[in-house]
Image 1 (spheres, helix red, strand yellow):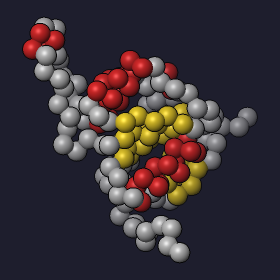
Image 2 (cartoon, one colour; image 1 turned 135 degrees about the vertical axis):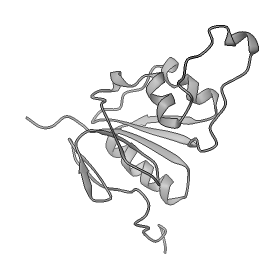
Image 3 (tube, rainbow, N blue to C red; image 1 turned 180 degrees about the vertical axis):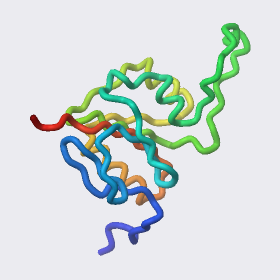
Image 4 (cartoon, rainbow, N blue to C red; image 1 turned 45 degrees about the horizontal axis):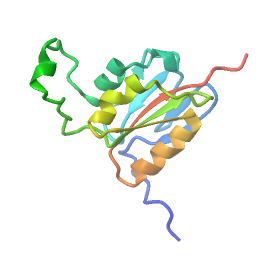
Length: 148
């Protein structure tokens, strides 16, 4: 029984992970990374979950982070979801699952972009499944702490 589609080397796939590293397409990373099924793998200067705020998430999904008019709320025009925005953002929070505060994920949820947090190992597996199903998913993965 076929459980997974044929491997496509042109898609970004999590090929391995450990407590302090991630491997995407057989390239090792020891920093936080963000990637989708296609395109570059971006290394991020995030060390912990506390470094993830609404501005980081909005920038990763391509929302305009430019200066906003402080009176814009009077227009009642909601932000516009980019055409290439992911359906869901999977956030791997290291070796322990840590939920993000509601105000951090609210801007994405308001646009209909799902946000799921889980351990990085679970996030890596979930990303691979969603990617293999041709879903438009974005992964933000923090490595765990290296062993002393």
